[in-house]
Length: 357
Image (cartoon, helix red, strand yellow):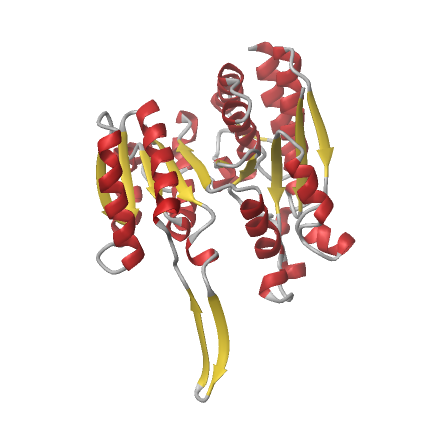
């Protein structure tokens, strides 16, 4: 039996997370595995009910579980709070830090039927299959920061701070994953300008001798952003620091047709956290318009990385592929000639394919 902490969060979270939970239940029936789900508050919903974005009982539940399934947090309702109290900064960042989740894995894989949904030409995106390995607990988001008044206005700073140990652990993980994939690693930095990036590049160069079967290239972040839309098929595994990884992985979502197709896994601690890359989308919350596939594909990553159930993970991914091949689409990936479905119906279609497959 696996214990899973379920954190629906805000906006569309309460709509997409149940579809992922039902998918796990279908996997359990298929594989003879029992999943035990315990739900808790996080984000804006937790602020409204408990006065803080990450209640102590939520964090305790996560620590006592085998994996965490997260929906989305935030929304305009809480944007007027001080920055340190908003759902995004007061829930996501401390949750990652407290659970020791130093590595975020974001795959950008184009399902063939969605080539027309991407804003890029099909001949550019067809065959895209890359993985961004993002350092998650260091850099600008966690370094020293300050904002204060001066005689002429205000001054503010955020510090991109990295140690050798922080870089080594994320780079070694990226090398290991690249060795299991197609054997090519792209390390992204800004070493022509940033001192922290020069330490990053020097560390990658020092470690590459431990992984002779992996080819390594270095790429500046601005060039990488251009190459992702110019020729995304050149990439296998991309490893980079926190801020660069945040931006590049969202950019990579257009390669898949929609950010609603982009799952993620945050690992490195005892408990892995799995969530879609999109936000809470409050403008469509409660309307059954949200795409649950990123959350369902995050469940596939949970099966693979937390429970070592590779066959079950592949079955979930295959079920999603078959649903798309049959022409079913949520609004974000809809094109004329396909069948428009809602959140719950898309989830049910995936489960049907999973059971029949």
